[in-house]
Image 1 (spheres, rainbow, N blue to C red):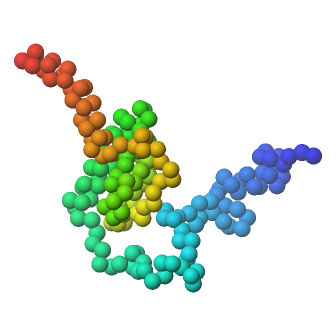
Image 2: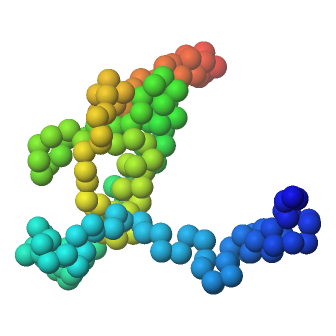
Image 3: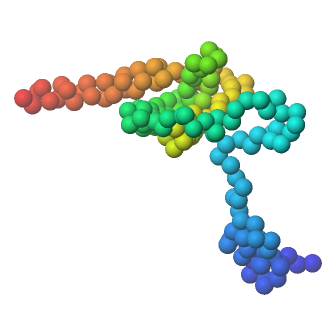
Length: 169
């Protein structure tokens, strides 16, 4: 029994070509139906515990981000890149943020926080958050710690150049 894989001209070749073209015989496209947001597990369920709550997507009164708020989010994204570059190599997995709603710490890895900030930029509203599953608090730092660490690294790197500049004058 031989395998009818790529190059053999058999059914395996046809399946391989179809995968490369991202279509299947039934016309299904790869990635079709993928959602940015989690799918509601109670959608259409008459026993939905949130049935009486208003869908936040239907809230027309929500204003888009102001230009100042948008600039703040863009600065946070830029800062996040710096913090990750400096802190990830020493084992920091992300940032911990004190939630204003529930007053509990929420642990975000670098990619999740970046995704949440980008979502805020595009939609104007924050994502629904869920606590991380069993995070190790020792691997997360606050924004203030990350900012202080980055400032300390910056100051250390520029100390030598300040002395060189004054010697040249």
